Image (cartoon, rainbow, N blue to C red; front, side, top):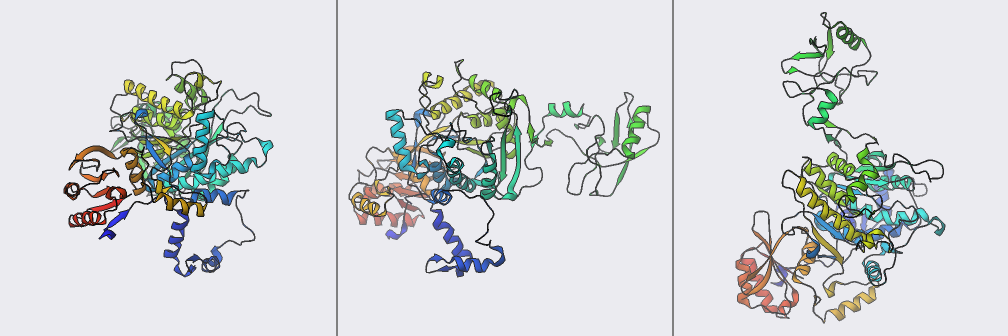
Length: 639
């Protein structure tokens, strides 16, 4: 009966294996002796396959190795950090301290195709901001070694100066695997937005064309981040940077847009009419041609009010009217006879029997507007971002240089998500994205759940941040988010989830799951570790449960509580209805009795998790648990 017991996977998904499995299912004739037959695959693709001798694309030294970095599974886990969390039991937001490459792998299981917007502000590769240490893409071992060096020695991260060679390649090798993994997390209608400047915008555009597809390019926004410009620049005083936006799949026209507030509509279109609509102050000129209309032409009389304002009277009341294109695009009148006639009527102050060819267009509250490709609003600037950040701290010094404006990010979030959607920022930096999500909610745009990931990069020893007690950027980012929540609680009119769960990247808590880069060494380690307890002695029940849940596909915000069942200390995971979905017994040092296991089954959870070593080699006890569980349709999992 032990075949009714499932074993928790030790690593994150292996994407090389999964891809081969997908090919085997789709084109079984291209699989020979358990391997993909590339020649056969090319034969099946025929003219759809590219000529191997001449290809179009972005190539650089280390690209294949960078792709492998994304495909290699990890045994890493996340440890709950209760001390640095806020409203742990109720929040749906998450802050993670750690290497974003490893974290992105950990998130694959549950968050695959669940993120609506990914916004990142990665290092711009200026030669000074390359925050990743040498070989940082190599995985968990390098990260753990590096963080120990930082904690013990205060070691700085590396730079990526042009004089070191392979300047662009180093940056691309860092970005490529992260973008590959990020794409998997987007919903089918999800969007990714990436801030960048002139140093790497050309390379990033080509890289994202490859990862997301050239046809998924939505736009390249130019943001005026510094109205004065940088006078120290070599040829021009640079005063802008970019945001590149791509989608996971084809989006409907106008899908990325922002709702206009009543105040914006009133300012742009004039006074509200009796039907709650807004109208243009005059007829606009936009297109030289009308194109073909999408319904039969209609003719309505225009009336001039005593104050000289022009209205259209219909059964729906007075409304603004504009021509519509076949695809639904909002058109405008040209400088043709209709507009000229209207102007004559307006000048005369009365209608003289003239009529205009028109289509009805309502401007009701909640109408949408598209973001412009040139963003020059003052609240989008670096100065605005700096003020928003500095206002949260009791210091006149700049604790963080050039933080992104949360007002810009709030508009990006609103334009590409809806209430209840999830936003991810895996280069969290100063914490602007989390702050922006709360700003959007506070102004009535609806709540978004967020996940922020930040490397514990050490702050410079001579910086204001270090003097203020913040040893790493992750600490500073988390502090900013907490302070923003406190401020928002005082200003917001409605209840908003202003908390977050904090986690830290760590090696697996299970000795038997630890892997080495050397295969023979790994086999030997596995054999030796099999003679020891499966879990490390200093791991808490919450740390063990978090790792098991992540590798079984649960989220980072599950409803978890401690309980005592049959005299055993257990953890309960409840679903949205309050029913027990998971019951976990995670003490390998205390062997449960059959009666205690029966008590666990009597709780009737969907799944029971027990550490393998808790049975202490008693196969009969394990089999009895499987039989008890099977009688009630309960899954048994071990770890």
